[in-house]
Length: 358
Image (tube, rainbow, N blue to C red; front, side, top):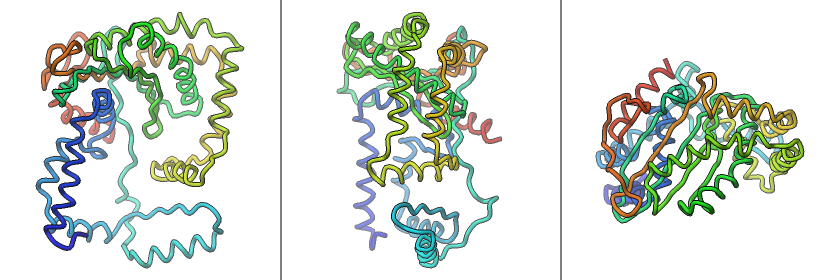
């Protein structure tokens, strides 16, 4: 801990400058940030503004009191991996336990693991959840749009199908919006993991097109992807994609740290699926074209009223990509779905958290 107030202020200043760095990140990073924020319950993640306000109020005395509480009691978990046997591992953990000397809390006191906030379920014709924010850096003239589809299924099969779709579409998406339409240098289709769920994400940043234009082109690509790219898939093409994904999932870790970090993620998340890659590799071998089409029809296109879509747009304050400055707050619903401004984020997250952890 800092020895005095002067040293404490130096640490505070480092944190303040790090938080201020958020404003000069690229617009696509801001679009991703607000997507992630809306998907995580408030109890797990505070927004940048809240952290800025909190760091100005904290004192050295607050820090000292907090540390005393942290080391007084809690739940301890340890991972020892590598060239060590069970006896040595237990002895090592025992030394740490005696050194820290905190009181173990009961199972009832252990906080819950992260459960992503479900995006409201809507029909494809009923719009989506959308957040529009102004780019905080006035000198950055780029716009950005991210369209994400939340996949709440937790089975290995569901996870490898969404990975499969991303592998099929990523190059096609780049070729269409970047190479052909020249909308921007940052064009990406990828899968993001959050706890046991997956999100299929399409993102574009542009200096020549407004965020509304970017969103429109992303949605056009998505609407045509089944006819252009999924329906024509042959067994041979599916075999090529399967082989490539199998090689990635079964490739041995080159560093112990890589394997240990993955295993630690299983522990901290509470999933404890240490053979996840093996199980997903097995599921991958059973994937058929019909599985891919059915998943696309339901999760992405919205068949059976299962679509959970989130659009995150960032509007620059000037330049060719600028458009109308987004409001800080919107009415709760509109004909296009649920529209949010930056001031609506807190209440939306509280509402979803209350429903998710009821």
